Structures are given as structure tokens and as C-alpha cells.
Length: 266
Image 1: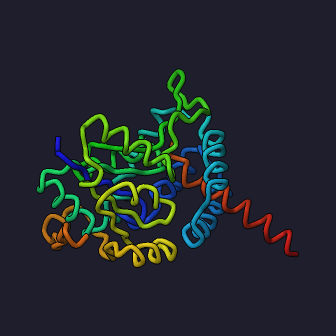
Image 2 (image 1 turned 90 degrees about the vertical axis):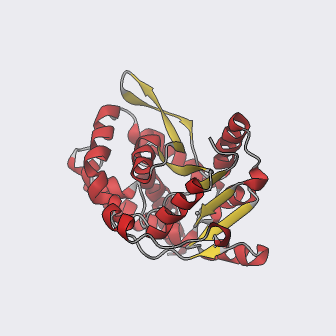
């Protein structure tokens, strides 16, 4: 256990895609979501990435997530993630992120993935990177199925709650800790530590990072694990980042808002 930690957002910070939407095809194949769900979510996720989000949207996302996943078998979801991980996630891990994680670990810091995606998804992705500490969305489970309740929704300001709880448990001084994210929705997380960095930032986060003179990192090389081990780039630390249906839920929330706005203007 290190004296400090480095907290990494997942999507577009460690991996070059949405972790939740990456599993849309196998979720559809196994009958958990419809083709319409997949198409609407992919479009709406793009709107989400371009426009960011707000508290109201995150609340709608959380509520839809609970409804969407209710009744899914936990074992089935874990099997889907396990079978698809190497194909859908491994090739998209940024080499720069993997190197930075390794450098923090080499410096004796704990590395923690902090993601709104589900624990069932984030934990196996962490295992690919040698990361065991996870702060992620936790779904309620009853008799092996998702209950429709969310125990902890790891998005926006709630990420800071998880980070602070872990810091209290382990004795981290957050002023000595690092955080990495691409999204302005993670400003509370970045502002909670002494060493924040923006990675592939959206427009709003880039502006805040420049105003506060935070490092801005550009990760551009997603490559599979085997190549990462052979071609690890140098990324100096001093210069520098559920349920499973959360991407689908975000998609529906943003898609619905976009459709309502379009209807109001027409």
C-alpha cells in the first residue's frame, strides 16, 4: 500500500472508447439489449462526449441504468465481459496510459481506476493493467440478479466521495495524490487532488486546465498488451491520468434530451 495514489478515469483516459458501449454487441447477442438500444446509444454517446453532461442528465442516466439492468443475471454479465475483454478492450488501452500507470506503481503509489461503468466491467479491465483498486458503479443484487437499485453511482461529484473514503481508509494525503481525466464532469475529482492532469480533454476541461496551469496530456496510441510490453513509451509522472449498461443509459438520457429539444424547435 502506497503513501499516495493516482486516480485514473477510464473512458478516453485509459482506453480509447466507451467501456460500457464496447460491450453493446455481446449484450445484444445475448438478448439483454435490443438493436434499437445499440443504435440510439451509440449516437447519444457521441452527443454526450461532445456536449458533456450535467446533474440532471446524470440523475436520469442513473435512474435509467437501474431500470435497464433490472433482472439481468450477474453471472451472465460477468461471462459476457470475460469473453469479450481481449477483443473489445485490450487493443484500445492507450500505451501512454499503461506506461504512466506503471510509472506511478514504480514510484510506490497505489493506482485506482475511477469509473461510472460497473464494477463487473471495470475490475477485469483493471486486471489487464495490473490494477486491483477500483471505484465504480455498484448495482444491487438479489438472488444472483440485478435488483434495479444502485448502491453507488460513481459519476461526477460521487467519484470524490469514493476517493475520499478510500483516502480515509488508507491514510492518503490527497494533496500528494494525482488524478487524470478527459471530461469536465470529473472536475470535482481533479480539484480534489494536489496533482490533477487533463488527458485528451473536452473543450470545457481544456479551458479549466489552461486557466489553472494543469498539465494537458494527449494520449494517441491504443495498442494491444503484447506491443505495450515491447514498446512502452516514456511518460514522466512529473509531466503528467453499473452496471454494465451505463453507456446505454447515458445514451438514452442524452438521446431523449436531444429529441425533446429538436421537437421544441420544430
